[in-house]
Image (cartoon, rainbow, N blue to C red; front, side, top):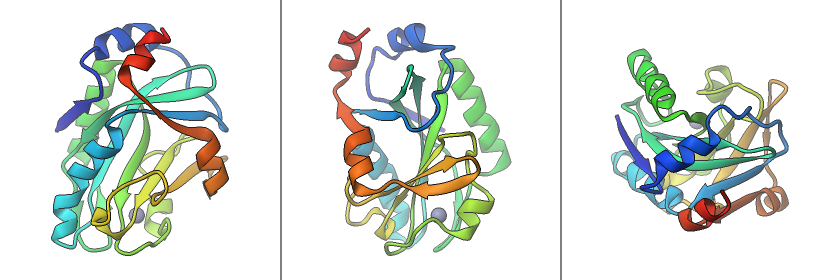
Length: 184
Ligand SMILES: [Zn+2]
């Protein structure tokens, strides 16, 4: 499994943030610059073949915010309308997260067209902890991946709620790695 970090100083972030508790929603979602671009790059190739693809977003919890620093690109089984993470790959993901001292905050996966969270997504989500996010990237990511064109679904007391455009604007931001390191 490939992992991409938005900063080469990931160990510095790891030292500061490991072991903080996962915040409860609503919380701010901060993506380090490059997370969307790297996810897009990983999602496009299978989309070109008319198949779904998935990446995972991991990082560190803050008091009332999550900091997404890393894109995990696991091996997936997928077809035109379904995607799963094989059991052995799930184990690799957990091992990597432990090594990095990170938490898994979101999966981002493609859908054909602009289809919302499916029944399969709700029955077998990648995560179901309070506040976990599923980001749906429309049109197999062939039209790119932006905060505006993706749907952000969040678990709240076992229900999946889609973040509305205003909530996305107020709660999600992108900052540079330098900016994140300066805040330490
Ligand atoms: Zn789906």
